[in-house]
Structures are given as C-alpha cells and as structure tokens.
Image 1: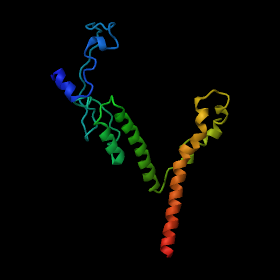
Image 2: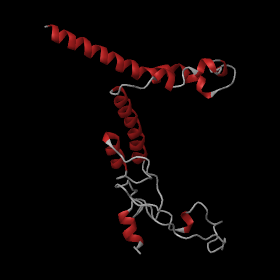
Image 3: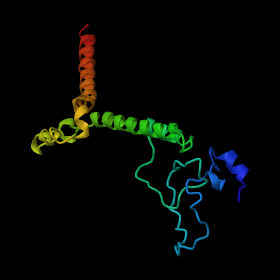
Image 4: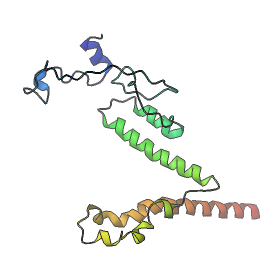
Length: 179
C-alpha cells in the first residue's frame, strides 16, 4: 500500500479531502456503519489492446467498454487527453475535441465510399415537416427557439463547404489539364 505522500506526488489532487473537516458530508458522515452490502471483486476483462487509463487509477476497472480501439488523429487526441487528470478541464475538452475530429474522420471516410452519408435523410430534417416539427417550435416555450436559426448553418454549412471545395478542386483540375 502506497503512502499518502507518494500518492499525492503521483496523482495530481489526490488527498484533497483527507482532512474530515474538508469533506462535503462532514459532520454528518458516520464512518463504520454496517450497511449489509457486500460483493466479490469481479473477474478481470481481458485487455485486447492498450486502453486509455486515468492517471488517478493504477489499473483499469475489472469491466470496461471495448466498442472500438482509438484510431487515427482522434485516437491520438484521446490518448493525449488521458495524460491529464480527470479533474482538469483540459482532459474533458480534449475528449470533446477528439469526438468532433472522429466525426469529421468518418465524414471524409464516407465521402470516399460508393455510398456516402446523406445529410438530408440522416440529420432528421425531413421529420421537421412530417412530424409537426415546425409547429412545435412556436408557442411552446421551447429553449431552442432562440438559436434555431443557426441549426441549418451548423448542420448544413460544413456539407456546403465540402461540396464547394470539391467543385473548386474539379474546376482547377480541368483547367490544369486543358492548359
């Protein structure tokens, strides 16, 4: 068992609540009450590839999610995020940025296939007209009414920019070949 000083040196912020007076539940906390709850430590799930792990913990939890391994630029950002403590904003902001990068990686990958994403059917735009989406926005005190004008720009803007970039690229290639 590591000492409190070695844990404090290894894990940023560790031991901030060691003094009972600093704990949010003090003085209501009553240690030593028997609740009757008991459990056995579960068998460890095998680690198929190196997982991201928090600097606060020496090992992974016995059971963890394994949907897909981190890959590409987004995976590198995720791995870098785990160099920071979970108590720091940098950790969470890097994870959010990795999610956005992952979405763009998948958009680019989709455009390279024979069946690219269809932003009209896959963003729910059609349900605005078939499921009373427009009517539900007025007179209902919805919180999103004030910024709903931005939704088409945020959702459609990147697709329009990508389409414009492709058109400009094809025009430039055509001019280059004709010269």
